Amino acid sequence: MATASNVNLTLLRNVANANATVTYTVNWSAFDQASNLQYVESVRFIGDDTGQDGDTGPVGDDPISIGLNFSTLLSANGQATTSRTRSFTFPWANLNEDDVPILGNTDDEIRAVVTLMPQLPVTVTTESNLVTV
Image 1 (tube, rainbow, N blue to C red):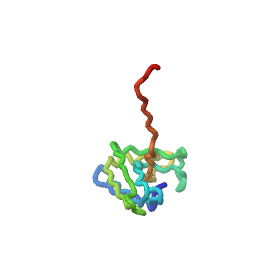
Image 2: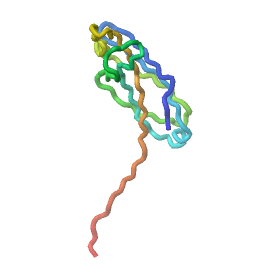
Image 3: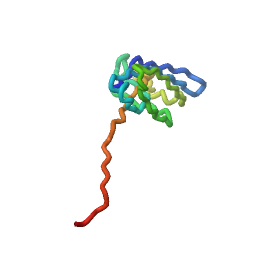
Image 4: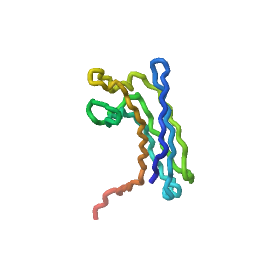
């Protein structure tokens, strides 16, 4: 099964927008290389609220809306690895999911989450017409 490694997120502010770039490597298994099995790649963003730096809000990750995001089909094409770069632009204000100054948590920790979902073969069954005997 394919895995993602070295996932890296960079965020740059451009006036009122966030320009996000996610880079990572897909590591294909021998089966993926031999079968060319397709995977649906998706990237989403979360506000990380694991309390690692004094967050005082509720624990749990908040989804960050980035608007319309198309999934992409990937396959090994016989390669052992594939380098990926995905770029997104969305409102900077969407990153502000922890802004509760009276609680002391005015920082926002953002992470990119890459998901690779295999498109496994499915069985298709079709019946003939009915014949009465």
